[in-house]
Length: 197
Image (cartoon, rainbow, N blue to C red; front, side, top):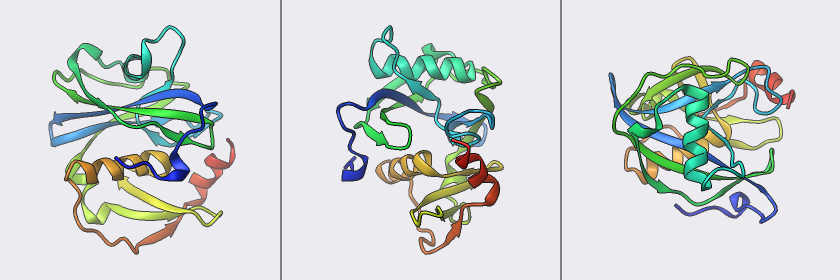
């Protein structure tokens, strides 16, 4: 993956990791997403990959991503085969340099929100829903920035998560043609949660 200049992290950014966990679900190949609790101080209510900061006791980004996924969803990390770590990406809003960790869910386990104060819901989102042109759009922030988004499983996936998902679909060869001119303003309820950060 080529990292655009605005996503290249400065060295002083805090390290974090997220887990891109792909598996074979009841509705075909899927990816695991969480919806963050609306009460959080950062990225409240947003769909996200399981993940968080890399703690000193973690043995690098892979260990951190698996630990956070366990804490947030209850999944059994021993059933996950790590495929690759992707280049670090800078999330300027929170000051983190994030290592995406791609993994295959060899032995899926049941998942549910771990800490209710952090995770509102957990979903295995089928790839055929993510790649359905009817579920794809761009969303525009009042700042004027527009980026990719997905409407799936009652969630509007946008921001960093949607950018990473969109890149993963392209790199993985799953992408399907869609109307890239379709752009909508971020809904007021989503903006209100984002403004609480």
